[in-house]
Image (cartoon, rainbow, N blue to C red; front, top):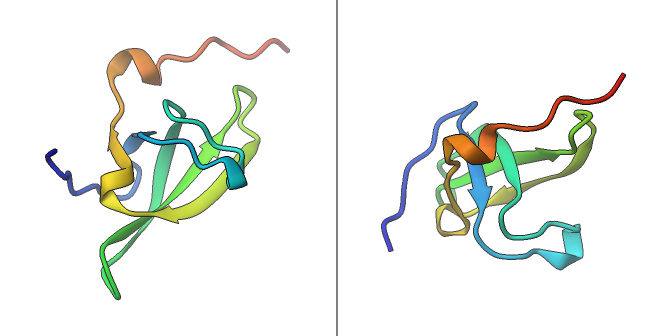
Length: 79
């Protein structure tokens, strides 16, 4: 498996469920910070279709992959 380096504002997809945080594999989030020590990790924020935060946590590179264009496309929120 190739491990990808991400930057702030990259859109990523969670690879495995993290049930204790209410996150499921396939959820899309945005990198909001990058950590170099004690190991490379990424603070990722996951939001619902209305932009409300579902979860925000530090994840290791092997827990993420770049999001595809299809995953980034979200239905418009109803007003």
